Amino acid sequence: MTLMTRRSALKLGLSGAAMMAMAGPASALVQITVTGGNFTPLPIAIPNFASADPNFGAEVAQIVRNNLVGSGLFRLVDPAGYPSQVGDPNATPDFNAWRATGADAVVMADANNAGGQIQSSLRLWDTTAAQQVTGKAYGAPADSWRRIAHIASDAIYSGLTGESGYFDTRIVYVAESGPKGNRVKQLAIMDQDGANSRILTDGRLATITPRISPDGTRVAYMTFNGPNASGIFVLNLATGQTQSIGQYGQMSFAPRFSPDGQRLAFSVTQGAATNLYMLPLTGGQPTALTSGSAIDTSPSFSPDGQRICFESDRGGRPQIYVMSAAGGGAERISYGDGAYSTPVWSPKGDLIAFTRQSAGQFSIGTMRPDGSGERILATSFHAEGPTWAPNGRVLMFFRDPGGNDGPRLYSIDVWGRNEQRVPTQGFASDPAWSPLLS
Image 1: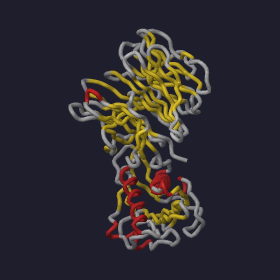
Image 2 (image 1 turned 180 degrees about the horizontal axis):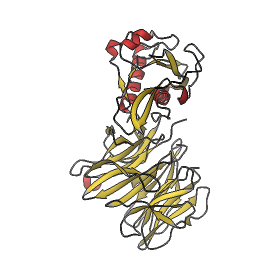
Image 3 (image 1 turned 120 degrees about the horizontal axis):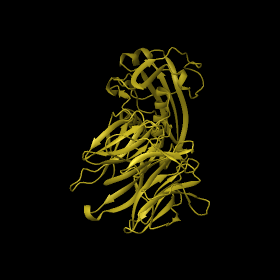
Image 4 (image 1 turned 180 degrees about the vertical axis):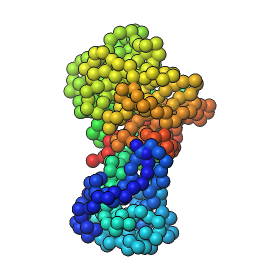
């Protein structure tokens, strides 16, 4: 897909004065079509949200602006030239005035505290067609008020791209602190834009490779306590309680949930070999998925749960393989220069992200599940650990420049554009992106 803007010839089934309802992608009058060529971000106007507290309305609107501009698909029209600084979702805009600003789309929304709940309504308008693109009414608890802005951002993104958004999500990551040779590694969680960060584990044992369950309620991770001691745990994000999955062989690590959230795939080291195992979270013993003398690790399920991609050195150096989720024969899919690791299947099922090491450089890239269409998105001294946004169109990873500095999180889209550093409170690695919050 290339990135460009277009106007669809399709008509909306609802007039601008119709009852508020989410319009489907096919009815969008202004729509961003995403392909591989050059593009001009769509100009959009986002006045402050109408609110009994004007400062609150302005703050919510600014988060929406930051989200959409940060996606790389939108250009914010300068608010100084708006015919109105505050939007009114209950009134039809003056389309001539808004067209004069250069905006192809304008957002009209409000947000107010109603008994401990923030209630909001939003309309997205096509200024040229003078019709509504989409509308939404929604709410969130007052102590999670920033979600109002993220839900609004997702509604706008979806209305103008035809794909689901990724703003009302969280990132679990490894927060690193202390001197380089003795870093404390704790699990942490934050909003996708870096806000509301909090620590989840006490740091007595190093925690690495967090992975979020498909419903966003649990995190599987590994604790490390020396070269021959590790264990896998599952943390309940609502209660803070942890469940030990067990320690198998000399080390058990690299856990990943199945798409139904009922099983974990992970690696077990016994002697010189490392193989993949599957364990039902309802109890029982793990079942071997691979066997042999190679190092098989980093399993990741296809969205339908039928296949697993993983990393293996069975061919001499680490490469990416795909096999049935029940185990059995595996097919190698990576054939470029260098070593391939950390494969992760896209939520859309169309791509597998990976880390590639070649000629002293690390790269984040994608390929199709059959190994074709390899594309390198970012390259540096050390870049690793890709994770997918739930819409399968943005990746997050970490980069460690070495020296006295530490790792930081970055995001980039699947076309290798719009790389951005993700703000964190200190050093950060091993990001894991949640699904959209319910």
